[in-house]
Amino acid sequence: MWELPEATSSAQPDLVEVPDARSLLSWIESQDDSHALKLSEFDGKAWSAPRTVAQGDDWFVNWADTPHVAASGNTLWAHWLRKSGAGGYAYDVVLSRSDDQGANWSTPIAVNTDGKPGEHGFVSLWPEAAGGLGIAWLDGRNAGGEGHGGHEGHGGAMTLRTATFDAAGQRLSESELDARTCDCCQTAMAQTSRGPLLAWRDRDEDEIRDIVVARRDGTAWTPARKVHDDGWKMPACPVNGPAVAARGERAWVAWYTAANDAPRVRLAFSADAGDTFAAPVEVDAGPAVQGRVAVAASDERVWLAWIREDAQGQSLQLARFTRDLSQEMARTTVARLQGRGRATGFPQLLADGDGARLVWVDIVDGAPRLQGARIEP
Image (tube, rainbow, N blue to C red):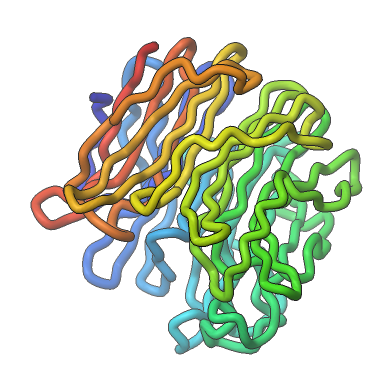
């Protein structure tokens, strides 16, 4: 087990790698209607004392749409979701930064500025030059108000937007990247040597909801292209987005699909920073497969985590592959979980030298609690 910072009623984790072999872990602690975003740094040996990034009683907190943190130069960035209306699904993305390693945080700024009381979330972050930040999010300004109706296949379309900010928090650019996406699946980003590679679940006019990627070359994004043509026709959002990792020009995308009513977890490799992908590896299949994937890569290994649930309960699975996915090297059950359904959220995964580190949520004494493990090959 990997001992994590002391926390009570902790959930919605984010685990990211930052320079100098350090890691950042963020999570939400909740009490009644009050929520706090916490942050701690791991230096390879020990955790720093948790610091509070922000707290409030006007937050939208959701098991799948979690806050994220990022490091860009000497600046730390964090986002969370803030309610924008009385409806249950009216909320905005807000962003804050710290120039002193998380001791103090700026007044939050709104990322989406449409002013419409709809859904805005499922964020990905990446570093920009000189401490700036890039951000992508699902934007519901065209989806028809505060309702959750787009998830059932009616109402307007959810869109994918991106923006960049400088280190002072000034907006530099904003654009729409996809005019019609799946409504509530996570976006994912990894930094390749040719720019940030963004993955998300698309939604076409025939309700095919497959995984697509785009990479930003300079200031322009490449056209979105499918990782694989699953052909999953789905009239509602599965709340089960992709995961992506990259090392140089090599990139890997993992995802869940249930095309032809067959639940599966797949993993695909790209040798050219996401321009093309080889045929995917089918990692797991069957009714127990829940997906909720996480992927990480070192120079020689690729790690994939996912969740299963059967009559005996949930389990957290981990597999290790060669970097071209030609060989599965090992597979193990990391943990048997007490929680079921949505309560256990989405696992977080980092490569760590030859091994990997995992953080996940389980239910302990009736409350959510972060758990951690380090895996050695």
